[in-house]
Amino acid sequence: MEVEESSLPLLLPTNETKPEFDGGGTDLVERIWIESKKHWHISGPAIFSRFAMYSVTIITQAFAGHLSDIDLVAITIATLFIISISFGFLLGVASGLETLCGQAYGAKQYQMMGIYLQRSWIVLFFTAILLLPMFVFADPLLRLLGQSDEVAEKAGIVSIWLIPLHFSFAFQFPLQRFLQCQLKTAVIAWVAGFAVVLHVFISWVFVYMFNVGLIGTAITLDFSWWVTVLGMYLYMVCGGCPHSWNGFSTQAFSGLWDFFKLSTASGIMLGLENWYYRILIIASASLSSNQVVVNALSICISIYGWESMITLGFFAATGVRVACELGAGNGKAAKFAMKVALVTSISVGFFFWLIIMVFNKNLAMIFTSTATVVGAVNELAPLLAFTVLLNCIQPVLSGVAVGSGWQSIVAYINIVSYYIIGTPLGFFLALSLHLGIKGLWAGLLTGTVVQTLILTFITVRCDWEKQAKETSINLYKVGSLKQ
Image 1 (cartoon, rainbow, N blue to C red):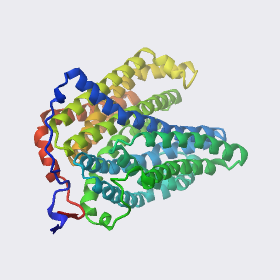
Image 2 (cartoon, helix red, strand yellow):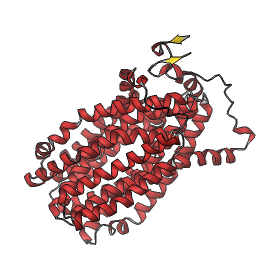
Image 3 (spheres, rainbow, N blue to C red):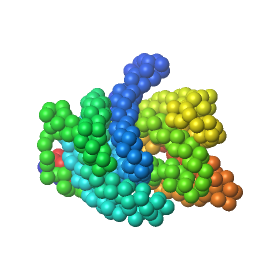
Image 4 (cartoon, one colour):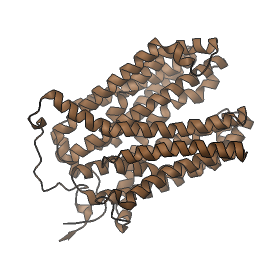
């Protein structure tokens, strides 16, 4: 009998009996070890691939710096501001696929994963089109934000040439999540590693042999990101995903509105998180005329950016593990996966907190030998250390939200915590109490604390068995299935 999927839950429960999660008779240590291996099987390649693609951007900035100082500033502004907004929102929109594919994989509804992937491509492609004005009008936007005419003009030109990179996100992020949810993480790492090596080579050829200038460096960045898209796509269509990819289907065009609502909630949720500390970069020039402080802040943000690649890997692993277990109907296993991920992430966060607090001067000297800048970094180190520590807790909780389909709730929490509490408090401390960048940063950190506490409360109060039972009926209804 054929039934319209509009009357069916998003994920149908399997006919198999749900196994009771008791660790298979094993003790707690062995259960932790098994879950940790599952966690690192996802997070390890995810961390490596994020480090690799982050390095691609850093390499591009380094080559641009050999052209001229103004070229370095222009491409840095374009990537840190314009591209980061695109990256954050499209990454968030793609995380809606992580919820659906993760739960579909856990429920053994493999045939729907390819349909979800295609729907995600469609939604992200049109979302990328909606974000295009940000690239086209980057020049006047940057002037409005206080950048000099020369920097804004060059950054605006770079932004136009980075539009292909912008559209690569719409295809790369869904592919990455599609493969992660099936635990095919090694291919993601191999493709990213190949892209980095290739990027170094083509950047050297374009900049030093062909003298293509700033536009050429932007083109190399576009090319390297599209290489990752092509690599993962070829793996998928050439037999790497025989159960979940059965070719293109017209089912991808049905149920797009409900899919769009879930994806948009994810985009708002993660976009607000990704953009939050960019406020420090945007406001630094107006809050402090001391170039030493601004340089010290840029070093701290660079360190924070590198460490964030690790936490993004934990975020991906937590989302996949929780979604898979909930899709399989194993509420206790989902809760256990969350606990192991949280303890692992806090341990890593405490390790980096300790390094920053003890070796802050040495870390600054990686970037500069100027004594005044090193001293300024030392003053900002406590704020950086506690930001890093919180940044290892919050992504795991966000990963739980993605795996459970709570994106809409967390989007509201982020708005309140970050932009109603954290940002106003930061500007109050910075301007009214004349604490400058330190005050702004302290206010932003307070917003992160509030968000973390609220997510912790929600996670602790969650009835995981009830959540597992409701997973297949509370999510959105899409496409058409045969019963």
